[in-house]
Image 1 (cartoon, rainbow, N blue to C red):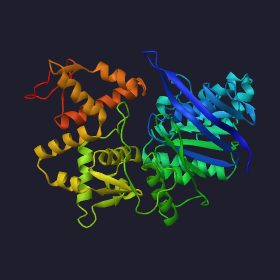
Image 2: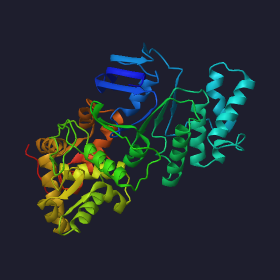
Image 3: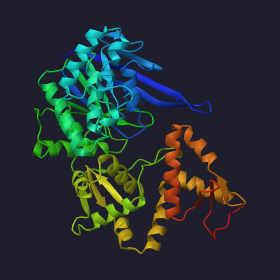
Image 4: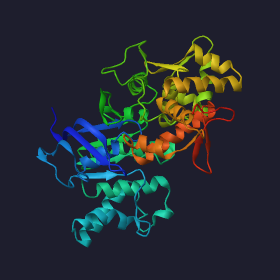
Length: 439
């Protein structure tokens, strides 16, 4: 077994909310990053993946468990670890050369040595000739190359990449990913291990030796899949497509599953709790996906990778739509496929008014937050309530930003299903017109 560079055992991390309550972000995380491997980490937004990377870099502490770097307890920033961020994180008033030199300057490296090493890193990442350019003069792909050069110039053992390709267009992201893999396989960079946080399932399979799938609330490793194909990997090969299908199946498996999904296995969505995150799913896109499924008259089903290609949706967009349809009983997830349910077919064939009625019925039956809001409004004499109490409820288990997003999703769904309405001027949620409160 290869030597572990970073090892986490039973790691837990909590943050304090604005109201003083604590929110568990990570719980019982066991993870080992060994020499000579690339690991991809997949999971929902807000599941704690970025927090995990910052813990591994020694940028934030832990509340439980143990973090070891080269078998020594990690307390504070690890000199052998560098991070590449999604947002480029460049200083706009500094040139490419100056941005790349920053890490060396912070370590007290002399000016001549800084310049020499920065030039080597800039050349390595394909930016020779742009040393004097400012970030605003560069394309998104070139700016991310600067971020990667800045990370590599300190010669890290471990490179942590936090959604490093997601802010780029598809072709630029692919080209940059291929360049990183070429440097890795050619041993042109000193890095001994890479951890990539991603939302892109194909990217994870093409890059990684292992794919980890993170669960949410709190974050923890739920599944692990070894990828033993040689690089470079052909994204159209049968072996790669099979692995992509398997990862889709694992990503959409119910939380009660503890192993690989088997062919034909139906994954019933676990019942939601009251203060739980909802998928970020737009109603128009949900209906478009249902209509696409209904177009397959024989089966009423499609595998998720094919749906991603046909709809030109990213995994980050498609998976929440599939999960929302499954949650509402309009479709069913099974082994990485999305099946239209009889209710879903009835929904597709229905008029707009009947669609709204069906949506509202399913929302009240399967989304406790929506049912709680409706019941609360019915008990209020005025039939209206401010959004703050519901935000506080969600903030017990979610971050402030995620609580806001979940409530916005519940309001959007509730308005479509005519379960309740929302006044964007006053911030009040109220019963639909013509519905009287019980109070």
